[in-house]
Image (cartoon, rainbow, N blue to C red; front, side):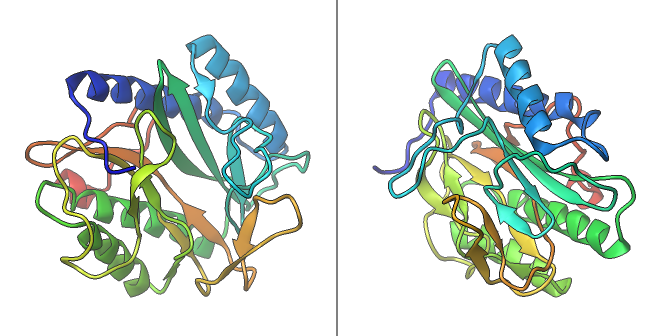
Length: 267
C-alpha cells in the first residue's frame, strides 16, 4: 500500500480524531500522580473514550506475529521504551511514564502520546523528558512540501545526540489515516535529502523514542509487546500526528490541555 494523500474531507476527519485523542490525555492529566496504577489510567481512558463517542485503536489490535493488545492505551514507565501494557503496580514519586493514545472516530485514526513526570523526579529524568519533547518539535518544524523524510530524522538525531542522548532505531513514526499504520515509515534518524519527498495531504506521526543511555532495546518478559532499554537506562517519547499543508504543517493532535510548542517553534 502506497502513501495516501488526504482530501479536505479526510483532513477534517483526521482533525477530529486527533483532537479527541489529545483530549483523552487532557482528561487523564490530573489523575496521573503517585499511587495510581497504569491499569486505572487505562480504565479512566476507556470510560472517557466512551463518552466522546470514540473507540480505542489499540484494544485487541493484532499485527502479524503479535498477540492481541489487551488495553485501551500504552503506558511505558521509566526504562520501558514503548508498548508497555497497563498493570496493577502503583506509580511512585520520581517515575516517568509515557501514555500513548490512539482513537478511532468515524473511521479516522488519531494518535498522540505525552510524558508525565510523577511527583518530583531527578534532574536527569526531567532533562530527558524535555529534550525528547524538543527533539519531536525539531522534527515537526522541518515539515513542509519538498523536504524529505531523511531531513526530519536528521534534525531529531542531531539534536538528541548533541545533547548526549541516543535515538532508538527499531521503532518509528508512520503514516496514518483510515488505517492505524500506513506508509511512509518516519525514521527518527537519517541523512538529509534522503527517503520520500513530502507533499501536501500526507499525514503521519513523529514520535521519537530517546534513551538516556545506549540506543539498544530488547523485548521484556513474554507478553509479546513490552520493549525496554537493553542497559536499563530511562527512555522517553512524545508523539504528534502531523499534516503536510501547502506551505508547511499542521499538528492535528493539539488540544486546550496539550503542552505548548517550545519557544524556538513559536518564534
